Image: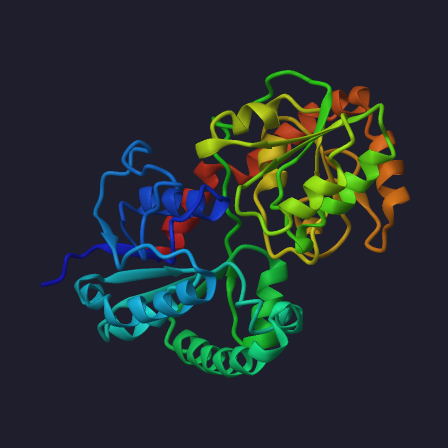
Length: 364
């Protein structure tokens, strides 16, 4: 019997990243049930976040990377027959193999954060990190995963995505159309606290986020302080820690359960984020919501939400360390304070209220 309800499938509630927050906000806006491979203790306690609908764990936790990926696909393929009880199913991240278990009349929506980058635009970057003898295994698995992904996405009725950049990526790689629905920020969480004495980086410590370049710049600016927020499993943390161990102006902080995270954002001078071809990230909107400008790299989706020189500073796409130093020196505490009102006004365009109106209109 039909429940006349909506359910959202998200691959894993593993940590407290922006996509877990996004899925939680979507589920609450739609009064939807939530299914995930597992709900980790490291992620949000959804009941404490006022989520009161059904939570379904599809399988048990596993953390070894490649085993996790294979087991995840298996779990969504064979443990999601309950989807036949729903009228609308929304898929997120790597849960798409469950589409085979939807009934014929189910409305199937896919919120595509990005086509899997290890299968498409960053495939060779991932391949280079695989030990030489295991590369044939990687090639075989990625071939089958790509075929599976393209078969699954062809069964979707509507694709939503997080930016014009990702929309273009979907079109280029899959020849499919999508609708942009920008993720929201809860403006009540991120607020201006004060102006402290530090610039803030809260990107993951991985090669693609280029935090190591930000650290290199501050090593040449001993009079300026950098605070780096990281996770314990960030892949490049040991290398970056070692490179900055003798520099007292660079501080690394890990925050259990994200406690005090919003305080660090609300108390910095400005935030810094210079990733490689980022599909989407909530940090600029969170920063602007706290009335803090952002130093970003001038490429791709980053240009979709900007008011350059008013809410953030764009450094050239082909930058070097000296270019970062130049613009950090330009982004003085006094200038950052003068940008408060523009940051607030721009953040309002990404409010949770606006997002919920658009989401309900699209889904219902």
